[in-house]
Length: 162
Image 1 (spheres, rainbow, N blue to C red):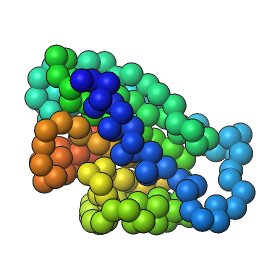
Image 2 (image 1 turned 90 degrees about the vertical axis):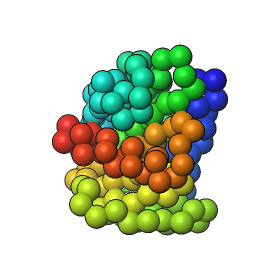
Image 3 (image 1 turned 120 degrees about the vertical axis):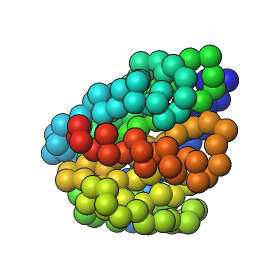
């Protein structure tokens, strides 16, 4: 069950990676990118447990395919629910690419008051702050409005540590 939740979260986040536009042009070299923070340190298992309910396992880091992309999966003990957070370098152009990519398949809702800019698309919160883009997904048997409330509660904690 946890594997199914992880796969679902990964699929949701994969749609949000930068560089998927029709004419992406040359991408940045990994050496030119700022060091990406460890996403598993942006939230704690206790913070996630308080929002998701129930004990939460320590984060398990995974790496994305794009240069500098790092992600972390926090599983709920004895439950298929999982929360994922990813971080990758992203300037204003990368942020616009992210918006454009998500808008290809999903409705986008702008969110005020988080980072430099933020939106939710496909139940995934996307936040641009400084040199980075963060995505946050709260898996589980929740309604869209419940998922939105959960990621909006977690996001300020993660952004404070970025």
